[in-house]
Length: 319
Ligand SMILES: Cc1cc2nc3c(=O)[nH]c(=O)nc-3n(C[C@H](O)[C@H](O)[C@H](O)COP(=O)(O)OP(=O)(O)OC[C@H]3O[C@@H](n4cnc5c(N)ncnc54)[C@H](O)[C@@H]3O)c2cc1C
Picture (spheres, rainbow, N blue to C red):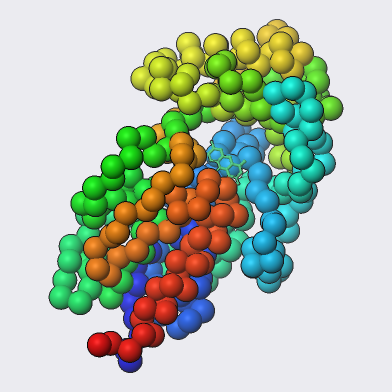
């Protein structure tokens, strides 16, 4: 059988896991990624020299498969977060190790992508069917595996999606203060806020060693879904001030220390509810957090599983 040529859409954790699984089985894989870098929603920003995770804050390493993939990569060293995460009642979340990468969580994806052929800054337009395959960005492939968030994947292939809002939107604000370890930041890493308010989550990046320059405190704020919907087209100065007004008393930080902020909008942040992934056209499959749950580790596992399923189909005798 000739070497199967497979296009993977997206260099997030699902796309990278799928591409590595297919490559290890001898397939010719090309990853197309619309942005400039690895990781998708596992994203890190270099903000004037501070490395801040504005997407996934941390990741779990609960499965033996994910642990093995991390251990097998000599370049990849991950560290556990030591300070507690508090729930809305001020109690620590159930004991579970949560990890980060010292150079930014997107380095997880970068390291796991070692050896892959990736075309960055290549947003894939709707692929065209060919006899026995698909055309993606003017190239021919036997199969396509899409890992763009489900609404985007469905739109690319004209697949109807009957779920009104698959993912929650999330307005994100990075806030910097002059002074180190302000207020209650030494005692806790993160705080899940009570429903009904502007904030869903806030965390102090200083707990990630080597990330923040001396003399500064950097906080990450994720707005609640309802707040994000209401302020989606609003001025970040205005919605940012509302988020800070909730953050500062919760963390005991006073605004005279305030320096600057940076904002980002995630249209598809996490799944709003479990969904059934619809059937894609012949020769196309979907992998990603919509097929499991919105976690870095789940996306990676789902990408690997989807690739194994695709391999099994390729190896099945043709009737
Ligand atoms: C604000 C926020 C906080 C989070 N916090 C956590 C956390 O603390 N812990 C945790 O485990 N998880 C967290 N998550 C969830 C986690 O980040 C995601 O579930 C996971 O990263 C999804 O991976 P994925 O590969 O399925 O999708 P993505 O990471 O979205 O990857 C899809 C990729 O496809 C690309 N793409 C889209 N369309 C195209 C196209 N047409 N052509 C080419 N490329 C395309 C995108 O640019 C993207 O890189 C968080 C997510 C967000 C947004």
